[in-house]
Structure formats: structure tokens, C-alpha cells
Image 1 (spheres, rainbow, N blue to C red):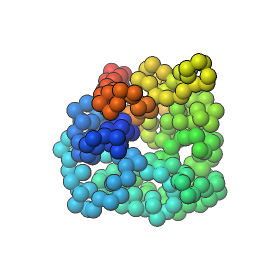
Image 2: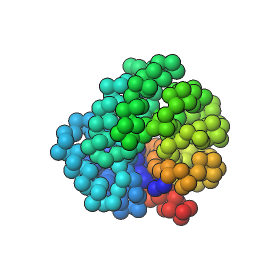
Image 3: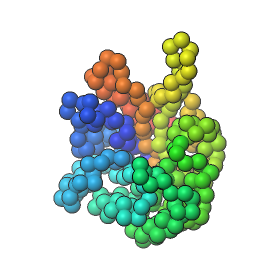
Image 4: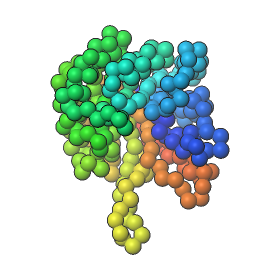
Length: 266
């Protein structure tokens, strides 16, 4: 097991709102400086345009920094997942995170099983595990059914219990249902706050340990140290009214706090 950071922890610093968006090598260097051991390149569209030489440079940078790389994308169409399998090979990646749905493809359980049965053996042959993330667009029970039906140890679940709250699924129930199949954990805390005038709620991220995530309970159920499951820091940090500098500064602080908290738990 190792602790790491995702591109989602740099959400605003790599966005169009950044005067100079951080580069991938800069994120790798920052992760190492913060004490991270893994970097998950997740939903980072530029990686799809990298040629072999540029991918080799990324891998060399990670190696020099002592970082393990993971990948993340969306969708389960075979041609897309096989493209990411090729990229995984170039980067030395052994875990790829994905989601069942994309903007133009929402497979039902039967179709998802059929597509994954076509692809997962290729992942297994390459020694790469594919993890499907828990999130509000797919019922957790359906996601578990898909993984069970494919029945391959190289297909599992990326656990992020905060995502499924929007489906009115309790985080503790998501953890319980997925625990035997988890291959990767996204660590982000979350909380509800009342809106002005008590008219509804805002559901957003908060510093690790200050919200509704029962991290200790999740770890007890999943047993990542025993099973070699990495924990990856992410955030749901709202844009700050004070502007980019304040947002970027707080994003960095949250990441440092999360990594420090995880490392103290070792």
C-alpha cells in the first residue's frame, strides 16, 4: 500500500483559470515534495496526445522522483480501454481507473459485462488491473454486479464513497457493498453546509478529517495495507471568492494536510 495524489488535487491549478496551468512534470515534482509515493494521472486529457517519447519522459521523471504512476479515464468501450492499456505499458502503470459511463455511452449492466469480458483478459495478460469508480450515475449494487459477473481479479472497484451521496446512497453502505472488490481508494472528505437563509444545502469538499468521511471505518473494512491497495488524495474544493491565488493556495494546503494526515496514520 502507498499514499498518493491525483490530478484532481490540482483541479484549479491545471484549469483554464490558472494564469500558467501546472504541467504534468510540475505535478509530479510537487507530489514527491509533499511526501506522496504515487501519482494518479486521472481524467487528464492531454495524456492522450502524448507520443512515445513524451510518455517516456514522464515515466523517467516519475522514476527519478521515486513515484509510482497510475492512470484514470472514463468509459469502457474496448478501443478506448485498449488505448489506455497501451499508455499504461509505456508508463509502467499497473492500475487504470475508469467509469462505466461517458457523455455518449451509458451501457446497462448486461452490455457493460459483455464489453468488459472482451477487454479485461487483455489487461490481465499485461498485468494491469482495471478499477471502476463508485459514483452517482451508477447504482453501487449495479457496479458490484458488473464486477462479479466479469469475475476476474484484474477487474475491481475504485472506492470513493462521497460520490454516491448524490444518488442518496449512504457512504457506509457503499463501503460495505464494495469492500471485497476494492482495488484503489480515492480519499476526499465532504460535508453539507446550509446556504444563506437556510434555503437548502451546499455539498462540497472539506479538509480531510473535518467532514463526513469515516476514513477509519473505510480502512477497517477494505484493509488496504493488508491487500496492497493505494490511497489517492483528491479534493472537491470550491472556487474561492478572493480569486485564483487564494484558491490555489488553499488547494495546496488541503493536499498537504491530506498527505500529512495519511502518513501519520501509518
